[in-house]
Image (cartoon, rainbow, N blue to C red; front, side, top):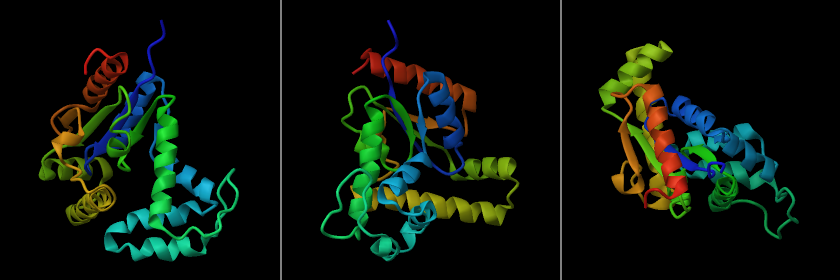
Amino acid sequence: MPEPKAVVTISAAYGTGGEAVGRGVADRLGLPFLDRAIPAAVAKELMAPLADVEYAERHLARGLGHWLDLFAPLGSAWLGVPDPLEPFTSEWEYLNHTESVMRRAARHGVVILGRGAQVVLREARGALHVRLDGPAERRLALVMAESGLGEREARRAQRDTDLVRRHYLRHFYKVDVGSPRLYHLYLDATAIPGPTLVELITAAALARARGDIG
């Protein structure tokens, strides 16, 4: 009997190697990995430049006016859907498209990094929701060691990235990204090697997909 298709969402604090872990889990499970693919798919549906979508997301914490400024001139073309009467001008319409991409992918099995997937797919049967975190100073040290960034640049990147991710979840879903209630596994990625994280998540994901655990 083939293994059932798993669904894994990974929320990763800055400096926890979320992309590498996510790709590793996807490879082990033989599933697609969605990270940048999500805004790319949304941009395609909206016929919007990918750079505009990414810019809006990076600057979300600086003011939601960026979203309306960017989306107002995009027009109303939706891929495969007749033009609506009103142009696409709302951050909530963008959010709906992003969620639609995730839900469609989840029907066939997927590993998704970030973008509130742990909330969007909270009721998805057999889905596993994972949080990668760790003490700020240890995460900072890992970033500096792996990227070559100086301490000042790394601290700024850590602060800004964690802020944007926290703000995204709070603004759209009214939840705290660090709340243990959102996850089945809450792992200190600064204390466990990446390959071991991949093994732990893969095993839990298969157990969830098979229904071995509730």
